Amino acid sequence: MLEQNPGLRTVCLCLDHDEAGIEASGRLAELLHEHGYDNVGMLQSEHKDWNEDLKARRGLPAQEAEEHPQLIAASEVCGRIGVYMEECVIPERVGRELTNALCGYEMNLRRDYPEGAMTCIELASALALYAYGRGLRQLSEPHSSEELLEQLRSCIHPHQNRSSLNSRTAVLAEQAHAVLKLASKPGIRSEAEKRQLTEGWLELALSCAKISVKYEADVLKQQQKQEQAALQQEMG
Image 1 (cartoon, rainbow, N blue to C red):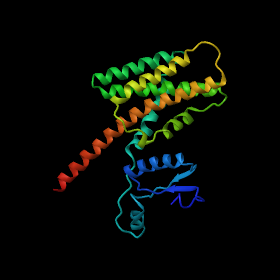
Image 2 (tube, rainbow, N blue to C red):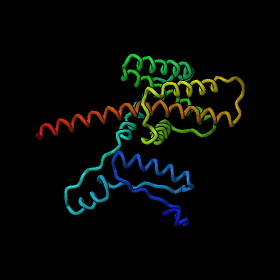
Image 3 (cartoon, one colour):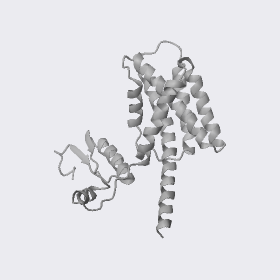
Image 4 (cartoon, rainbow, N blue to C red):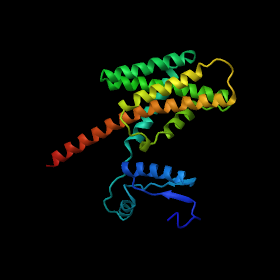
């Protein structure tokens, strides 16, 4: 339709308000941006889909919307990251503490202790996000802690966060090594180098946060399945 009507430049995605619809909206938005459509929005129904909204308006039983588990988890994870930023970050030891947190994450994964691994990875995210905020101040673009956390949360897109946690370890280690190497480089940084480092901190904070969000969302989905199974069993 868009190819046949090149004058149409604004797109509003109106898919189902459930896990599949939310992920599909994210994928379609990316695809449209790649094809030059900059004005792409998303409109969600109040219930699971637009037909259900119509039923509700007429007083008929309507299926409720299903929020994506990762979007639910993202708010909780970013909240904890904010607490770590306020209570655990020692400015002059960010690099050292980040390395320790990532080592703790890998060690706990190997020991099959995911809760401990998630604590470590959230701390790592907090350290990287703090460094990102410090970089923004050096670029004369200061952000409050609340703004940093909202930016982090808004960058977590479920359709981009589907790979298994074990498959991310090597990539995360390489990413952290590259950022820490750039941060420890001697000499005065140019404006471009400052911005490159600052963006690297944000990407590292995001990579760490996405790991915890994926884990927590998977746990939530498993709990929901168990509750549904128990309810079905009670109903006979």
